Each structure stands twice: as structure tokens, then as C-alpha cells.
Image 1 (cartoon, rainbow, N blue to C red):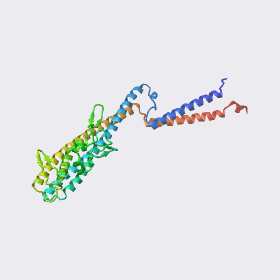
Image 2 (image 1 turned 90 degrees about the vertical axis):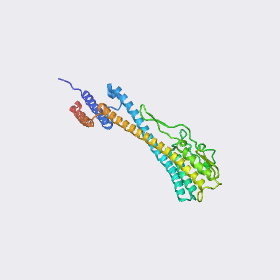
Image 3 (image 1 turned 135 degrees about the vertical axis):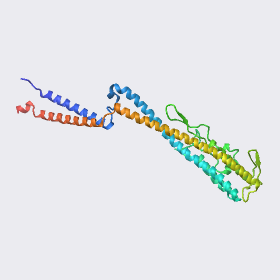
Image 4 (image 1 turned 180 degrees about the vertical axis):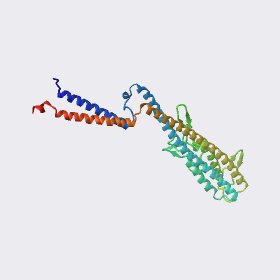
Length: 321
């Protein structure tokens, strides 16, 4: 006669129940994560390759984050440069219109407004810092608030507080791009013109391209311009043309860098997508398979529970009663 110990049956049924619960938990974790395991030990021999791919993925994520930040800054710089250019072309048009009309009564007021536009572009901010201040982004680079302040300064160059450090950004493994611009390089030529015009208005002789223009006194730029004033303003229009052309070139350079960064971002995104597919193919887990495993584990749990329940009623003590 074969003896069957109730305790041994209980132990076997409980072990089956625990195993089924572990399989159910593992299947649920795979459904939630889409991965075979939640730690490296679960990947066995593939752990080393997964570590390498994960490291590559982290570098790509870093380059993408940097690229997005740089792209946003370049876009802000484009808007700021456009504003500076708006002030420069507006000043040139104001002078041309006044000379064509034969009256310059409101010219200084118009130029003052255009200078404010230039100042606004030079002191543009992005994410709490001044775009064109160089390394000291917490200091406004263009310090002369008005044309009067500009003319009172020792020179146009003295009104710029930026340093010479241009921002550089590493957008991939081998490429570092200079993405920063400086206020004195962008606005220096324009500022010289505004300063000369204000100095002439104040009664100070101004030399342009070797030619000295002498005003009759303070407040010269009003009423009907004489030949000397017309010649001076015409010369200033020529200087504005040069300054505006230089600014256009700088803006175009910013656009080229923006396109380059955008292309690098697209490439990094493509690499990331390809890497994620590779990792999914090698180390991912089929959701359908995970659901099937979960269902099978749940069936095993129910079966083990039923066995345990039936063992309660098959005890020798119940027969003795």
C-alpha cells in the first residue's frame, strides 16, 4: 500500500502556485515595459551588448537635447537680427524720404525711434540671458539707451559691454559649431552712423570717409536742408547701406548654421529610431506573447488554488471524523 502524505501534497501545490504567481508577475512587467527583463541580470549573455546600445542611446539623447536647445537659440537670434535690420533700413528710408521731400523737421525723432529698434534687437534675450552678450549673458550688451547717450560716450565701441566669447555647441560626435554672435559686431557699424548723426545735430564736425562735414551749430538737422546737410546725410545713407549689408550677411550666416543644426538633428533622430528598433528586435518582448504568458500563468494560479482547496477536503482527519 502506497502512503500519500497530505503535507507533501500541500507543499507541492503551494510551490506550483508560487511559480505561477512569479510567471504572472514577470509577464505583467513585460507588458508594462515592453522588455524581456527589468535589470541586466535578466538578459544573460546579451547584457553586455545591451549596455553598449543603451550607452549609445544616452549619447544620442544628449546630442538631440543639445541640438534642440541650439535650434531654439538660433531661431531667437534670427528674430533679433531681423529687428536690428529693421531699425537700420528704417533709418536709411527715413533719411531718403526726408531729403526727397526737402524737409527734415522730424528726421531726428524718426531716427531716435529706429535707434530704439536697433537697441531692442541688440539687447534681445532668450531663456533669461542676453543673446549677443558673449560669455556674460546676464549683462545687457548695448548700454546707450538713446542717441543722446550714444553721442555723449567717448566712442561707439565704448557703449558695448559684451565680451569676445562666442558660444559654441557640440551637435554630434565630431562636430562643434560656433553659434554665437556679438552685439558690437552686429550693431557696431550702425551705431557709428547714429552717433555721427547725433553729433552733427549737436554741432560737432563729423568726418566720413576722409571728408569732414561741419554743422552751422546745434540743432542743424531741421527745416530745409542746405547743400552741406544734404551731402552729410547722403554720406550717412551710404554708411547705413554698408552697415545693413554687413548685418544681412550675419543674418544669412545664422540661417546657414540653423539649417546645419536642423540637418544634424534629423540625422540624430534617424539614428535614435534605428537604434530603438534594433534594441526592440534584440531585447524587446512581443506584447501578444506577454499577454499569452500572463493568461497561462493566471490559469495555472487558478488550477493550483483549486488543488489546494481540494486538499483541504481530502485530509485523513476528515475521514476519521
